[in-house]
Length: 129
Image 1: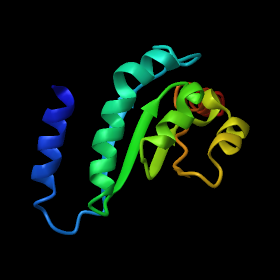
Image 2: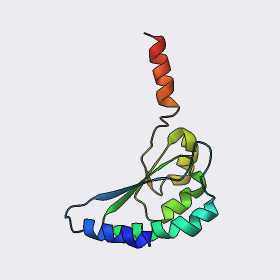
Image 3: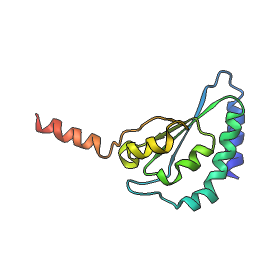
């Protein structure tokens, strides 16, 4: 039901001309692991993503997905949904892991790990005051 609702919203968006990309955001992982197992992702979320993203791509529009947290266990499934750009966090997923899993398959928009980097930067700046 939710998939069909989202598809209807997208159909309405497609009435606007000159769309290059439609962006989505989801929280699929936390700082250490997936919130659900890869198998559960496959059963409950993958098919919805695939249907929605394939529909969008069939209209020549790119699909951008941001996901917080650790998602390396499902990167292949995410790529298979038809995404154009995957925005995932660097330190949590590991730059080397991201490169090995995604290079040549999908555009990656690295999202900095604000829970580690920003607090550390603030601490450094406060020490220098």
